[in-house]
Each structure stands twice: as C-alpha cells, then as structure tokens.
Image: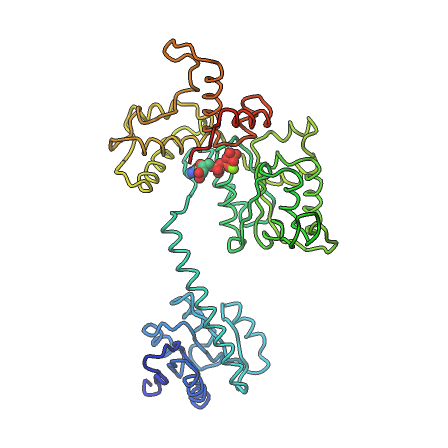
Length: 463
Ligand SMILES: Nc1ncnc2c1ncn2[C@@H]1O[C@H](COP(=O)(O)OP(=O)(O)OP(=O)(O)O)[C@@H](O)[C@H]1O
Ligand SMILES: [Mg+2]
C-alpha cells in the first residue's frame, strides 16, 4: 500500500507549501501531483482515506486536496478527521460533476472550496489552492496573534463571586449570542464598559469591531459628524469624506457610552437609525444599510431624566430591551477583596515589584470603605499603593486616599477657602477618573463652572 505513497516535488531550499492529495484513481492522482509539484507545492499522495489520515499525523500540511468519492473512508469523513487533527487545515474537495449537494455538505463541514472532476482547468485549481494557502496563513497568523495578545494582556475577565456579579455574568452569556440591544446601568466605575466588551467578545460579532463612542466627550455638532460621518464639502472644514462610527461598527457592535449625555436632538436622530437600520452621511442623500448591534451605557437615572424631559421615552424603550444593572461595589461583599487581590497581582507585575497581597488591617479597611468611585477607585488605590509600598503585603499606610474627602481644617489649622475648594475638587476628579460631567453633578455645580475652576486652580489630570 505504501508503495503508492510518494513525496514528489521537494524543491530543496525553495519554500514550497505542503499538500496532501488523496484520490483512489491512480491516474488522476499522479496527474494532479505532477502538475502541482511543478507549481510550488510539496505534494504527498495517498490512494485512500485511511492512508491519508495515517500520513497526515506526520505530515501536518496546511492544505489537502481530497476526492469525495472513495472506497472505504469517504472524502467527507477524511475532511472531518483532518480538521480534528489540524483545525487550520484548508481542504479542497474533488466532486463528481453535478453532485452539488455533497459539495454543499463538504462546505458545511468546513471545506474551503470544491472543484469538479475531472479537473480540466488546472490553472483554475492552482488559483484556488493558492487562495486556500493564503487563507491558512491568515487563520494561523490570526491565531498566533490572538495568543500573543492574550499573553500580553491577560483577558480582563469579570472578577467577583457575589450573587449580584454572578447574575451579571449569567446575563452576559445569555444575551451575548443574541443581537438584542442592551442597556447597561450603574454608578460610575462599576464595570459597564468591561461588560460591554465581554458581551461583544462572546457574541457572533466578536471578529468584527467593537466601536465605542463616549457621548459626553463631544459637543452636539461634533457628535453628529462622529456618528454619521460626512461627505466632502458637507460643512466648512470637511475637505475629505469621513466614515462615521455607525459605519465603522458595521457587522460589529456599537457601544454608546454615557448615553444620558446625548442631546435631545441627537436622540431623535439615533432613534431613527435604530428603527430604520440605515444612515446617510452628512451632506449625502445616499442611504447606507447598517448591520450593527447596539449596547448603551449610562450612570444616570434615565427614567428620572424622562420625567424631566431630558431623555426621550421612545428612545429609552428602544435601548432598554435588555437591561443589565451593575451594583455599587459596596454592595458586593467579599468581591472587594477578590478584586483587590487581582489588582495587586496586576500592578505588582506591571510595575515590577514583589508585592504578594494585603495585610489583615488593610483588608479590613478596604472592606469597611464606602467606595463612591466603585471598582475604578479600588483599582486606582491599589495601583498607587503598589507604587508607594515598601512591604511585601500592602498595609493600611499604603492605602492613600481611602479616607473621606480632605478635611477642611486638618490638625486645627485654619486654611483659606480657595485651598480647601481646590483640594476637594482635585479629590473628586481623581475619584471619578476625571469624568467632568459626573464630577460636576456630584459637586452640584455646572460643568462649565467646573471647567473654569480646573483652569483657575491649574489642576491637571495625573498620568
Ligand atoms: N468585576 C470587575 N472585575 C475586574 N475589573 C473590573 C470589574 N469591574 C470594573 N473593573 C475595572 O474597573 C475599571 C472601571 O470599569 P469601567 O470602565 O468598565 O466602569 P464604567 O462603569 O464604565 O464607569 P463609568 O460610568 O465611569 O464610565 C476598569 O479598569 C475595569 O477594568
Ligand atoms: Mg465607562
């Protein structure tokens, strides 16, 4: 049997692509092998599925050309078995003329392509094989890349064992595979963006982009052109056409962060897009169809905003198909310490310090604290602690910023009001990760007032 197995066309130093050809008809097999080995392939042949499979364990070629109809193991079965050994293999099936159904079945089982027998157009076969070879390289490179990325950034999974977080995780796996719109609610720093990423990553759209837009980050007109894109000449300054984020997210997921900050006029436009699933760029009448999944997030109380006529009720119902509410960190019990441990590990590695955990007193402090800035605040505090500490286990002293806001008169010293205000604003900004909208809200002042004070006091965002 092995007498019929041959390796032909090995071009020494020239890099040829390994290919397995399995066909029970000797003449067809030799003809294909001869032609392909003259065209850059290192061909190994086998007369039946069993032999092909046996050879493959050593060969591990990226490509195979398999006859569909053979005595013994069928081509389809061989296809399945080879893909079990090497999920990246690209297989072209040889099918009898007119047997479209089996060809379709082969594609369903993961064949890359099929060619009808007898093969008359050898050049065409070569084109398809070259395409399969390219596909294999793409898939393998992609996999290698993904693995490397995973090593560089260990998957930021959602930490926590509290019933509340378990429920969130359950919701994620439930809604991810569906295309339903999701509304993420919860106070600042509770993990809404993390959950949006998880939903996208677990969905069928994972290979396509997750495009984020922070609605609070743009003034109204800019928000519109960011979302919709524009044609050249749509407005002064539009000197070239630009794709908007709706278009960029096509096939994937659009994450509308801080949706509560979206101006009412934009809300109307967004609603229309969600209903019609198509957009026009600014300055264009051409409709572009959209296939997007929408996830929106907010730390505002939208129901209350509706009552105050600041948010459209109809848009709310469009977005609120599935709601996932992220609880404040202080309500998650033991999760505080689980998260703290995780962040100790993360930042000890990142900063390159040998810190292994948290001592008992520090752990008690973390557990008792209120966490107004939630998980983000915890993460910041641990990062700072790792930078500062000189011990192996973090102590209470390392937990800088855990105390409530800066006392107005520390140690009985009388301080000017402006200094207290400056310190308090800086404290709040740091706690809320320099989210101006939220900081202004918490301080009970207008965002523009906050901006002015930041400028007056010369406050800058630490990095
Ligand atoms: N359960 C969790 N496990 C691990 N990390 C978390 C978890 N929740 C949040 N984080 C981390 O905390 C930080 C803040 O989370 P995220 O940005 O998702 O919050 P958010 O709810 O979007 O906040 P905001 O409303 O201010 O935008 C991020 O670095 C995130 O990775
Ligand atoms: Mg966020």
